[in-house]
Image (cartoon, rainbow over all chains, first blue to last red; front, side, top):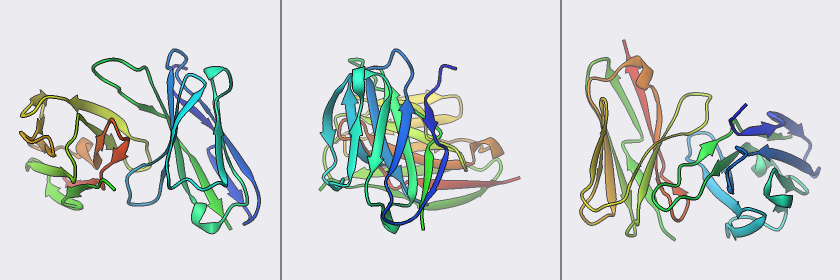
Amino acid sequence: DTGVSQDPRHKITKRGQNVTFRCDPISEHNRLYWYRQTLGQGPEFLTYFQNEAQLEKSRLLSDRFSAERPKGSFSTLEIQRTEQGDSAMYLCASSWLEPLVDEQFFGPGTRLTVL
Amino acid sequence: GQQVMQIPQYQHVQEGEDFTTYCNSSTTLSNIQWYKQRPGGHPVFLIQLVKSGEVKKQKRLTFQFGEAKKNSSLHITATQTTDVGTYFCADADKLIFGTGTRLQVFP
């Protein structure tokens, strides 16, 4: 499979619980992005990595959110003490940084529901 | 902060009619990307525009980047039911997506 994969596809949790999502990018891609998307809205940037370095983090991202990309391969996004407002689709994307076009390939997403 | 707005928010057309969505940024863009997201799917990259006034075509789709590099448009000629979805523009540098235009095509 040459696409971006995400696991799990769906997650239902109770408010206050911690959740962790995984993203496996396209193998040769050096950039990895996390977005959050709610119904009827465009993807909202959360953070991105170039190789294993986290280069940028959205100011909208609270301290409850943390992301890692050990060894520059897969990435995890953890949300601690989930709130109902965290309910959304969490999208991962990857790209190969080129000088001209930075096409992002998106995964299928993880849909989080916080009860 | 920067805002990237798209109009219209929704568009319903009869199959065969043309469709246009407009993207406007509050700040100058170094480049702009367009994505399509089918219902229940994830965004799929369509194109990137870099130069002021640039026009690119992909079959029935025509993309344009404004002269001031603050706006862009996507025009679809003779829509088909396969064009259904939400079209997003995005500031590729700042990773900001537009509000999207949802297209519905009636056969």
